[in-house]
Amino acid sequence: MIFIAVKFTVRPEHSADWIERVAEFTSATRAEEGNVFFEWSRSVDDPHQYVLLEAFRDGEAGGRHVESEHFKAAMAWMPDFITRTPEIVNVEVPGTGWSAMAELSPRG
Image (cartoon, rainbow, N blue to C red; front, side, top):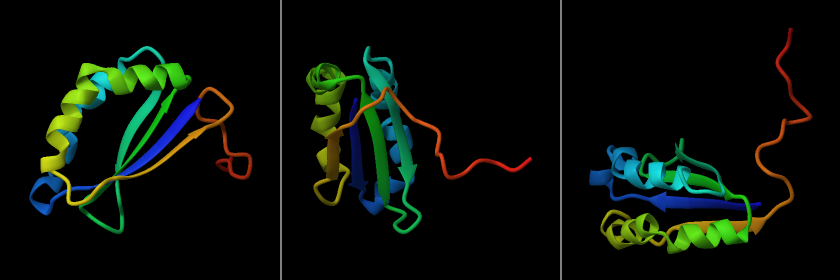
C-alpha cells in the first residue's frame, strides 16, 4: 500500500472554505479504483494548515491518481490558494488499510 501524508498551508483568506474548495477533488479521488482512503484534517496548531492522509492499493493505483484529470485540475488551481509548497511523506507500507491499535481499546 502507498501511504501519503501532505501538509497544505492555505492562504488565510481561503482557509475557512478549503474543505468545500477541495470537495470535488476529494470525491473524485475517493471514487478511484485502488484508493484506500483520502482524508482531510485541520491542524490544531495552525488554523491555516490542513493535513491530507491518503492511501492507494499499490504504486499502479497511485500512478493512475497522479495522471487523473481531477488531480491535474487540482494542481492547476491550488497554487493560488496555498502560502508555501506542501510538505509530503510518501512511503510504501505492508497492509491494505488501517489496522487496530494494539495498545489501546475502549473500556467496558
